[in-house]
Structures are given as structure tokens and as C-alpha cells.
Length: 371
Image (cartoon, rainbow, N blue to C red; front, top):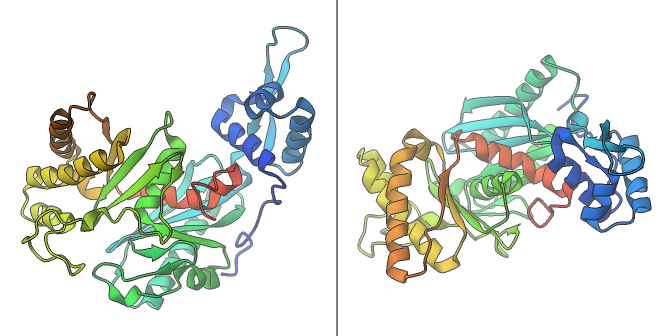
């Protein structure tokens, strides 16, 4: 990709402490945060915070945001993150559709695109189409403002896959992807650093960074397939082989219908069959059975439903899934029910989470993000 903003990088953050400060600036938003508050929340000395913030300002990552009244002495200078100091591309490659977003450092979407995609086409053809959509996305963004500093591309795809190597495995229904080095192939076509992860992991990461409070949760994505993203112990849980979250292929009916994975009675097969028959209530009941299994197994704080199929009738899915979970809770006698919410936007939360695969490490979120 021969573009002025391709492959650009911010100056390297030199320490974990700088990332902590930058993350607090991100969370503070437009209101900003003072150096004294930064010192209190990080445990760093005021002198260390002053040095870090001076460097962040010199690198264009932070700026003054006015003053705040002090309880004594002169007013405190407030600092804020400069969102347009860097951007990331987020891609959701679904089985039949591509969603692309460009987000700034605050996670705000500044441009987006959606296009048909045949994920069953030869891998090289899919990479070519994807690279073309990135070029178009950046062109759309540049048409609305100055040239962007693009730090990289996060790509969210169906699993299973090797997150560290960016290599896909035998994606259910698409065996031609087995062993394909998607990260390296797309990086070679675009000139941008690339991070690859499962679609459900990307969505869970994005949700975790936007969450109102801490806690363990499962993100259940029902679209053209069914999977889960798990956020446990303050970090995205991938497992040593990126195999965690293959939620759709738990067997719930030993003599059930065949699944495209080669098994029988998988929750994905049962759920999608009900969707195809127009029986949304039954699809929700099946999804609820799997959700209740997760709640019982992991004792999570909440369940989040997403994906375009859920988005087409969210109320029915919430009622059905909640009913099964609450019955499980009553049966177990464990007390209060587990909160259940939906995320709006169809495929957008996945694409936005994919962009965070690139951005999260800048803010010290490497336990959740891309490395």
C-alpha cells in the first residue's frame, strides 16, 4: 500500500509507568486529569509524573485541558489525551460480510465501511479484497480531515486460530484456511502491522475497555456462527492455544443433528437451525442452555449477548436466555441472578474491538491486548 499514513508509528512509550499514565488520560476523557491525581492513582512520585507527562506532551499524545480549582495554592493544570495523535484500523471478517472501522486513541470511530465478503473464496482473494477495503477506509477518513497516523490493523475472524502467529486453523466450514498466515499476508499487502484474533475475543476486549466496572463476563456472539469471548481475572482469556471460547461446539444433544465441525448436537447447529426455521424463542432457549452452562462453570458476573442475529430481535433473546439462566440459579440455590445485557450495532462491536487489539498495549493493557 503506497500511502503516506501507512505503517506510521508513534514514538515508543519507554516504560510501563508511561502507559499507566496514558491509560488514565484515556479514561478521564475530555474532562482531563491533573498531575497530582495521576500521581495518586499510579503511586508514582509527582516528579516522575511530571517527567512522563512532559514527554507525552512533546510526543503529541497529551495536551493541557485548562485548570481545575485547588483546595489550596494555585489552580491545578489539567491534562487530556490527544485522540487524533494516532489511529487503528479494526476489521471484522465474517463469513459473508466485512466490517471496517478506523478509530482514534479514545476508541471513537472516525470512519467505517461495510462490504459483502465471501470467506469461502481462496484465501489470497480474501486478503486482496480486505486490503482494498482498508485503502478505501483510509481514503474516506482522509477525505474528512488531515492524513492520519495509523498504528496498525486488528483483524477479527472466526476461529480456531493461533493468535500469536496470526495463523488460522481449520475454521468451521472453511477448511481451506487451515494453516494460512493471515497476519503476514495482510501486512505484506498493506504495509501496516497486523494483529489477528478471534471475533469473539476482539469484541470482549472492546467491551472490557468500555465497561462501567470490573468483573468477569462472557460475551456470546450469535451471527453466522456462535462463539464466546471470555474476560476473566481482569484479562482476556484465550488459553495457551487461543482455543478458549469455542462455545458453539459444546455438545448438548448426543444424537442431535450434524454440525459443520464434524460433531453432532452442537449448540451452534441447534441454534442456527432454529433461526433458519424462524423459531427465535427456541434459538434463545438453546443459547440460554449454553449460557447457563458457562455461568455454572465459571461463576461469571455477567453475560453479554451480541451479533447480528441477536440484534435482529434482542428482546426475545434476552427473555429466553435470562429465563434459562434464572432457572439454573434457582436450582443451584446460588442467590442473585446474573446480569444479562446486549450490545447494539451488529458487527460493529467486533470491528471496534479488533482496533483495540492494536491500541490496548499502548495503554498498558497487554494482558488484554495484542502481544
